[in-house]
Length: 422
Image 1 (cartoon, rainbow, N blue to C red):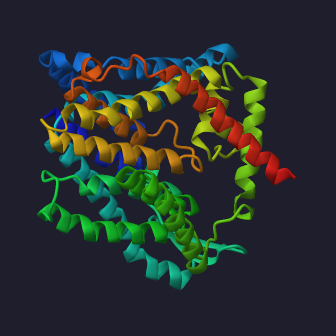
Image 2 (cartoon, one colour):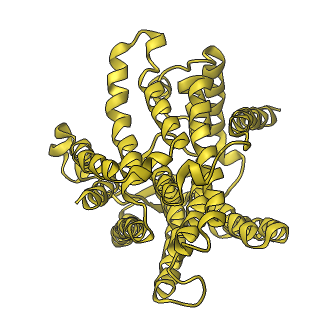
């Protein structure tokens, strides 16, 4: 029952029934479904004491959630903390429920099927509406009509709700791709592979039709992550060459080229984000305040977190990512012999999280449901592998890595701004 509620909740959030039926908006159906799934997840937690072995990731998520909800306290806007709680709670609930309920390859497969069906539903509606948009030049719910000097004329498919942005929908498709090739068998062409190949082709067509430069670069990153994982140093060199050729091909065939000049507005927003961080480096300007101040979001998940939550909140967010990636990376060594399917899921989710974070450099996806879902699925795998007891973090220096990445990514953004201003 709990798993069914979770899958329904995820599907409804991604399909956005509130956009289909605006009259439901005041009743917050997504929050109600999320709260309804909590008691069942708590019951499973009580019946499964091994879940308590996942400590570090869980504590970091709780600390981050609490810090974000209190991010307005230094600014005296106490009512805004309640708004933050209502906005962020449904996504954090997805993390907790997913971590508790998705602790087997079979259940992870059901979640994958849900994500795939949502993507196919959105793409089917987009394909159906493309002829109308091309004929009239008017946007529809699932297709955005674009006319500007750079892209001239193009159609870009998108979803509703949280997917109502071609860039975000492109990221969503890329996030699912690594999961498609996880099967019970380690080798050989199973029925699952025969389904995965055409779905992969369909999703790559979908990425192209989103017209998202970030998603197109994400394809190159996805190839790089896979080849580096499979062939180590040789794979890294091959992926660099393949990625370069892929970007050249995209620029030659796409109506939206990948270039620095195409991101002038984004660089201006990054400059404002750095100014906000300088103004309040420790606490930030408050959750959600970037868009309220600018009218637009930061178009960078890392800078958005740093600007709104300061270096403390940014460090907690980065720590969640670092700890998750470290422990996922060690799951195949721990359970590779006893539970190979779980080990393959760990590899796939590590790549999914990696491509999400890569494309997040060009999108504001710091607090969104897909990220917390990936973290929750990862937590479920780590728990099934024995949690912190079987995969200890002692000696990994994860706080040092987290802080280093925080500073390093902000330095990269600053360097990009300086080079653009020269």
